[in-house]
View (cartoon, rainbow, N blue to C red):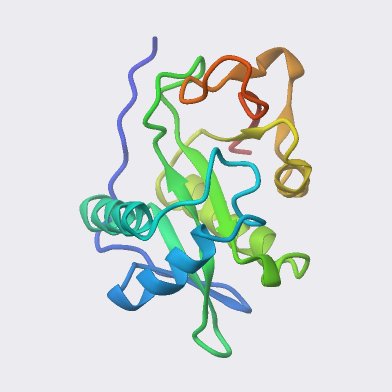
Length: 189
């Protein structure tokens, strides 16, 4: 396996697009994050909704990794209102997967913000950081096969999927309806 070094950016990055700010986590984000993670529609393609405790633990991990590395899973807020709408960012998967080590891009937005292009806009900004500031050569994304909305975002970002790279997610038991995942890749141009 080729060597893999996790890049560091200093100071922690904050990113602004025309409509969005991707930024470090604040304590005030925990409540709306927990509400989003408790929404069955948002969590449809995850094993379960998250309890407040699990949601807070995830937010703390995201915040700590941004503090440590300067980049990660950023809060997404609307420029116009400062309102929390979810997260988008870059991450190193915590599971042994057929394509690790790698950097993945991921997202989760409130259901009432879907269909407005926010996810694609924020993800493009995160990819720009990954390729142009961190110097990554490839960024991946993966999701459960039934999650066609997320796959549509991956395609809009120019990511490509080879069905031969589909894999069974190790965190889900055999027979689970969300176990089979598809892998999308995007290489630096």
